[in-house]
Image (cartoon, rainbow, N blue to C red; front, side, top):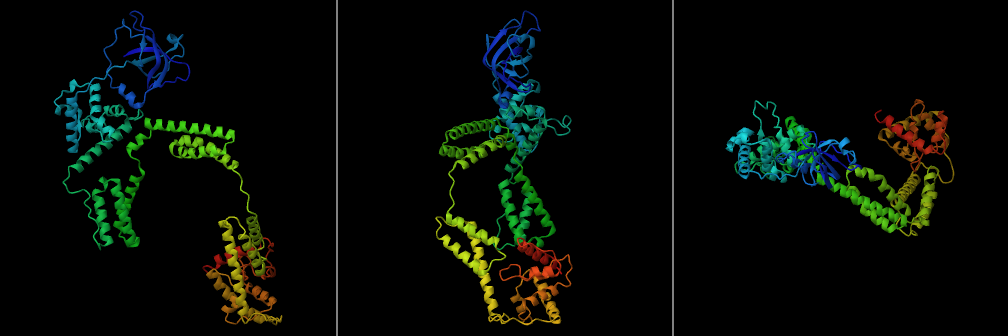
Amino acid sequence: MFRARISLPTEGVILKPHHVYVLTEQAAVLRGPQGDDRTSRWTLRAEGVARLTAGKAAEWELLKPPSPVPAGESPSGTAATPAVHGSPASKTDADAEKTSTPLTTRSTAVTPSPDDRLVADLSDVLLKTAREGATITWNELLEQCRTRAQDISQERRLRLLTTVDEPRAKTHRPLLSSLVTFSTQAQPNSAPPSFFRQVLLALGWPHWTDAARAADIWREHQQRLHRAHRAASKPVTKPSGLLPARPGEEPRVRLNAILRYLDHQGAELPFLDLYRLMQEADRLASRIGNPFLPRPTKDRLQHWRTVFSSHKDAPSPREQENREDPEQSKSLAEARRVFDGMVAEFRAARDAGDLVRAKRIRRSMGPVYALRLSAQDREAATGLVREFKQWVRDEEPKRTADPSLRAIRGILRDLGTRRAALTADELASALAEADGLCHRLSSPLPEAEKKQLGRWHGNLRHRLQAKENNADDPSTPPEDGRTASRLDATVIRSLADRVRTVLEDAARAGITVTWGELRRRMEGALPYLHPDDQGEILVAVERDTPADEPLLSALVAGADLSPHGLYRHVRYSLGRPRVPDVSLEMHWRMEVFRVYQLWRHR
C-alpha cells in the first residue's frame, strides 16, 4: 500500500471518498519518488476508472497489505487495476503534479488462507451458545477455543468471523457473530461491538449500513438464533399444540382455545400459521356475534388482529436490504435499456406509418413498463406511453355508426326531451318505430340504448295500466261528455281536510298518488269532480302550509308519474313563483323530495 498522485480522464470523473474504485484501461506510472525526499510520491496516469460494488469493496478491508515498498524501489511500468479510495483528482497529464490530490492506492495482495481449525472451533462454540440462549464475549470465545487474544489482530478477527458466517449469509440464516458481545462493564446499553458492522459489510451488506442499522440487525439475528434453537431443543411434542376442532364443539369454547394458544405461542408462530388461526378466529367470532362476545375476549381478539396486521404489512429485514441490492439495480438498468429500445422501434414504426408494427411494439412495451421498470423510471415514461397509445388510437380506422342505431338514439333523445308533455299514444308510436329499427341493425343493440328502451316500455305499460284502472273506476266521467256539477265552498273545505290527511300519510310513506288512488283511499267519499273543483280542493289543502315549505299537493301525480296538470295552477293560486316549462318536471321532482324529507318524522 502506498500513496500516489493519479491523473484521471477529464470527462465525467467525480469520485467520492467513501467509495472504492479500480483503475481500468491502461494505468501507467509517470514517475516514482525522487531520491530520499519523503514528501515525493508516485505519479500515475489512468485512462478510466470504475467503482466497485459494496460487496466487492468490503473485500479490500480484509486484505492485509504486504511489507512497505522501500523508497528506492518502484513498481512495474504499468499499474494493473489497483483499487482507489475516491477523492477529487487532476484533469490532465501536464499539471498532474501541480493540481492532483493524493489518493490511497492498494495493490492486489493475496488474501491469507483462513485458519480452518480455528473457524470450526469458533462455529462450534457459537452454536453451543445459541442453544443455551446466551451471548459470549470475544475473549471468552477465544478462551473456549484455546487461543490467546493477543494472537488475534483486528484484521484476523474480521476474517475469522466473516468466514464463520459466510455460508449462513448465503442461505439467509441468522449470523453467529451476532452472539459476540462486550462485557457488561464495557457495554452497559446493549450496543453491538464495533466490528459487527465490518462483518456485515464484508458479507455483502450495502455500504450505507450505518451503526444504527447494524445494531438493529445484530439484535434481530441474535433473537432469531435464540428462538430457532429454543424451538429445536423442545421435546418431540409439536409446538403447534392446538388440536383440531372437535365435531359439535361450541364456537365460544373453540375461540377461547385459539386465543389461549395465541397467548402462549403466537409470538413464535410463522406467518402462515398465524394467518390460518386468525381466519378461524374471525369465523368463530362472526358465528357467535359481536354483541355476545365478552369484553375480555373482544380485547384479546382485537390485540391479535393488530399483531397480525403488523406482521402482514411490515417487510422482512432481508427484503429491506434487497431493495438496494446491486443485482436488483442491474436488473432495473437492463429493463430500462430494453424499454428504451422499444421506444426507438415504436418511433421508427410511427415515422414509417406502420400501424400494425407499432401496435405490436406497444403491446410488448406494456409488461416491461408495468412490471420491470423502477418506480422512478415508470413515472418518467408515463407521458411517453400515453402519447404512443393516443397515436395508435388516432390512426385506427374510425367505425361509422349504423344509420338504424343513429335513428334509435334520435328517438330516445326526443322522448327524453318531451317527457312531460308526452301522451301514451305518442309513446307507443315512438317505441314501435324504435323496435322496428332494432330488427334492421347489423350488430346487437348497445347495452345503454337497450336499458333506455326497456325503461320506456315499462313507462308505457304503467300508463296503459293506469288508464284501465281509471276506466274501471265508477267515479270516472261518463263518455257522453257530461260533467259533474260544481261543489260549494263548505263541501270543498271538508273534502280538502280528508285529502290532506291522505297526502300526509303518503308523504310519511314516501310515495305519490293519483286522483284514482285518492278516491280509493277515501272509500268513495271523493266523487268525480269538475276540474276546477279539483284545483280548488288542492288549493284548500295548502291553506295552512307556510310559504317556505314545499307543497303537499305536489304528491298528486299524473298516471305516468309526471307532474299533475293542476300543479302549475295550485302554485299560481298560492302566489308561488312561476316555473319555466323546460324545468317544470325537475322542479316538481325536487319539490316531492323536499316533501318526503319534511314529513318523514312529522
